[in-house]
Length: 195
Image 1 (cartoon, rainbow, N blue to C red):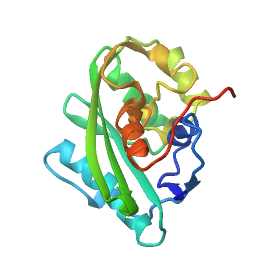
Image 2: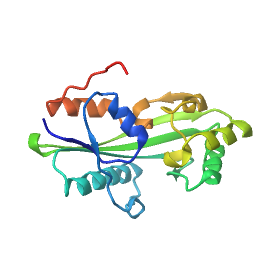
Image 3: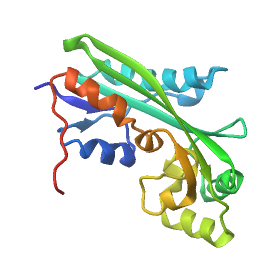
Image 4: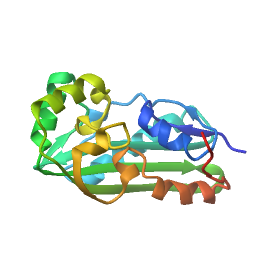
């Protein structure tokens, strides 16, 4: 069986992939994401995911899976906050508003001639938050590791959201509705197991 390589340091993505019961290893991509820009945000997030996959594919053989996620609120791109203060500001900025989560996925399996890129966009509305909720959230969760400073798949994160349209796993950084059919094409069998 081919080696499966997840090109990410994201614990969230690793947790989502672990639920598929397919062995994998982690190889992070050393790229400058901020140098990759495009006026079309859908193109930008796809380019970043591909750059990560191709960087890892230069050094490792196997199935390479890479993704990138950012939030867009009021036309502004919200990536990972640099510190807790910026995370608090991001959450205040998003509360009561519609937020679009862009996740680019790149999947490279040279043995089966699969070279796939796609972008999943999920719309959600964050509810109004009290200051104490924001303070507790930024101080008790790893907000600096998430685009927009929140994650639905992390405990309490789903409670920040009023409604959502689109992929839950895409907001988590790995759109498994796109990924699972690709894994099957590669001859792998993702299944749920009891933890």
